[in-house]
Length: 218
Ligand SMILES: [Fe+2]
Ligand SMILES: [Fe+2]
Image (cartoon, rainbow, N blue to C red):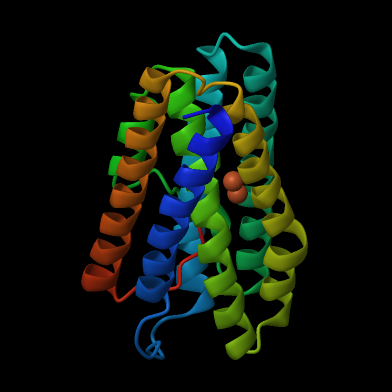
């Protein structure tokens, strides 16, 4: 397969999985106890982990263009963290008292931080995880609109989503230069699949343990 053929096939495979994630995320009636504040707390953890992964990878990535893309992403995710924190404060939650590291890092974080090669990192982190963020954020925006929280919806739609889209599209562009041989393609596909699997498991656990669905991504 050429790099472009590989990317198209990975995109199709991811799109099918994202469809399932959207169904899981938007499944059932949202209970009254599911509030925007609770979901924004989950978002803080996702943003922190996304920022930290990008920073860890930046230090250990040789390709200059990928290193710089990761640097931008680390900054963007930290910016999202601060925006969400501000919104929580406006909603009456003292966000300075929240430490998303409580309870430990997620299995997805552990998996991603262990990835060593650039093709796997870009496939898992930017191309796939940011793709998941785009579909999850859209579910969350719909939920905010349904709850008449137009300000949180606008923050996601107008500020956060364009950044996540940039991360995802940049991931595609970068990946095109990293998957010319079959071994890199196999590694990239495996990393994308595992990322989706861990994201699905996390979503299912959150739903069963805390009734949390419709949480945004990173
Ligand atoms: Fe992101
Ligand atoms: Fe983000």
